[in-house]
Picture 1 (tube, rainbow over the protein chains, first blue to last red):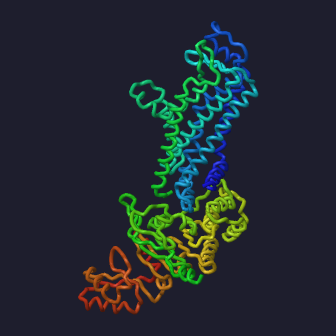
Picture 2: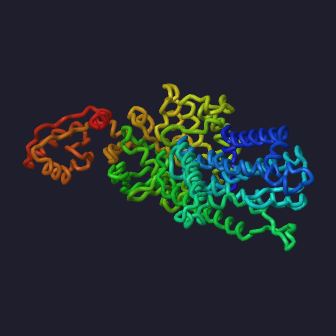
Length: 291
Length: 311
């Protein structure tokens, strides 16, 4: 099994297409960081214009932690599309190329191959996320420095001490890995249904857009299914940055306001991953390889 | 050791029993049966779309048969797939490969999926065997169709399999390349004792290397036999036209001519020594069958061409 995973990783990282996502993320982050470095004070002023009369904030609001939060808000919506480029091509791309029949006529079962491909695509996804974390968090910390994290929610503000922030990002990135692995497994399922590369990539992207719209629409009929949609849970990494307060309205260090929500989301995402991968294995096992 | 040797050389490496494959209403393979003995070069002939590749894909468990049974090395492919495929090397239809990998990288990659360790020297030897040693480091995207075909064959050979399945291995090759592959097939069977199952839509490619030939048409077996006998100029393929084919066929099957009958959907075809054509006619007339004509084909090639041109 390990040799199959090595083969799949080798193939992924020998393809120029693989590096598009790494390049795109780097380009986006660098552009945003550059913009904020040059014109960050104006942006911070715009953010705080509604509360400037009632609240005085000391220190550096636009620090590396806030920049990372802004970047994650912007990018974690779009990274799934980059993940789909590889994941949705893992099986269908080989079917299209004609190499699937070579792999499936080796002395390893189709289940082994499908699982090896999924694990390899998952490793790619995690590496992409680590790359994102490195650029968005550590490079931002290096460029903008660190201070307390000041976040404006819809009707309240959150202030987290700088010494209480880093572990929350670790938690957020671990959570984001589950979100992106759900996308990987969805792309994989689409890939198992097709023999061309484009269809599953477009299909995965369309499914994400479709379910994201359903998740955000506040219509009673849709509200019934929302808790079961993976898109409803994918952005709950933000829960790591909602903190409990005591009776004096002071932040409780190391606390998370709604940890149950995070657990539920992780469970729903994990179930989706298992469902999508199992379905992929069953489909591929039954499929006649005609490509 | 002797016992094992005797068993190996007396066993059917491939045993196909009544396999059929339907894709919806289309019958791609229809009740096909045959056996390939160890150490043999078996020619599998048929025009494009006749069901050759579907059969080969079933042998490699890429396609699930609708019915029937396939045994390789005396074991069911459905139940012992992994162990069987360890001993099989195959190319299937086009030589589709990874354009961004080199010839050596392809062999290294496919050597990795074998349970036994394959030495680097074996990879180099295999590339030399197919005439690609001088392009070993080049990416496949720079290869011609013929070179890809050679690399496909190298992938099939790199793990030193006992059974080699080659689906249209000379596609895209120039005359020298075709001659090289023919020589390689003969070498593999004669010198290395491999069993080679080779398909083609050209009789001329197969007749020079195969011990046994099977012709398939529209998924059904048309002719099967020893190449030398089938191509024997002393034996002719004849088509008999009568007023009552049913009675004629019944008479032939019960008599000494039954062994010469070729399975065809329409008409009665036999392959028999030229000298016996008159006796056959006489036998039919005696049985009360009015013979309207006996049409003689010149060779197996004519017969093969007739089958393919009628389609």
